[in-house]
Image (cartoon, rainbow, N blue to C red; front, side, top):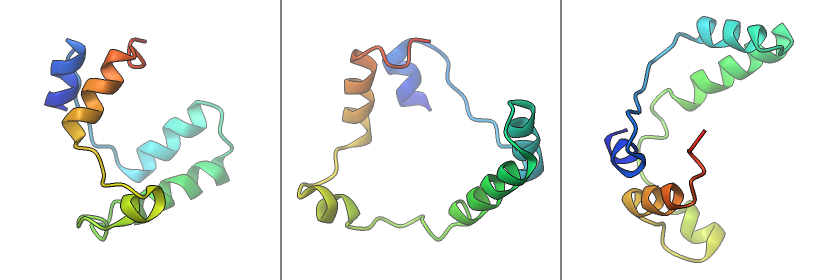
Length: 84
């Protein structure tokens, strides 16, 4: 978050939410409850720690090495995509 904050000049923070709160927020935004619960369950699976190590997916999919996160942040901030 610090790198994005520096690149955009705005404070960016992360707030963890429970799967139930995430699903409730999706329902409040208009998603049907079954879909919201399905997405919440998907994120529980994605964030369970099994994705914590690096893999070679970028190299295999794009045929190049992955970019450094700092480089990604600088390039994206320059496009003003985060200026909402």
